[in-house]
Image (cartoon, rainbow, N blue to C red):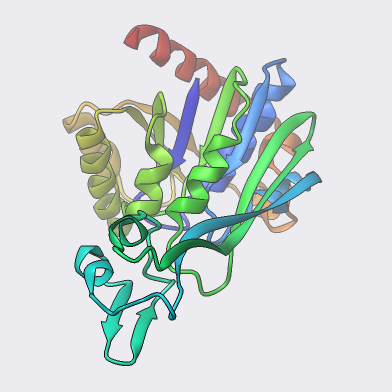
Length: 284
């Protein structure tokens, strides 16, 4: 089963759910692989303290122009829908940060003056923690596009019984790229007006993608009841409600997983895992 842990906004507790769920599943004997797809700000490693066994530089293709062969015809600029290449009287300008590596420019160049180069966008790290596999991507500082690196992170999955993707926040391209191809999505929210507003956006997105999903309410007793009412009205299952406990906050501040040191939270995540298995069975 492939599960993406996502949310409409940041700070709701996605990493808390991802790491604790992976830990509990591994503790009861499941083969687990946790992949941190929040490549702009990966933080699962803070709680898992993994042993990194391999690091790989991730590059994307970009055009390189041979100025001696280029005639300035403008075919490359005409085909580029991202305005990543421009033909001027004095030569060709390439904006690598805008390039999507589609290959259109070097395919249409009549003089074959454009060749395929590469540009590093980040690194991919593989390792292990608590006996299960861990993978994360780290986007290069200043890089504008996260999806190419997220795709590389997802390609590292090894076919474990349970694959968990810790998604970037929001409903933009990085989050959608993470959720593509998963069996289910866990939308983590909080019982606040902002949490509910962004949850509705996330629900609309997942429904359009036609993916099975459910909700986790973090700090469930610290806010309003409107989130539960919304889920009931929209017939969205709530699989887990994490209480607002000082002990959980203290564990988090120490970089510890609550399910590892608080029996009450451990029981809740065991129930969550069981509910996910039931949801998958019912959908088949």
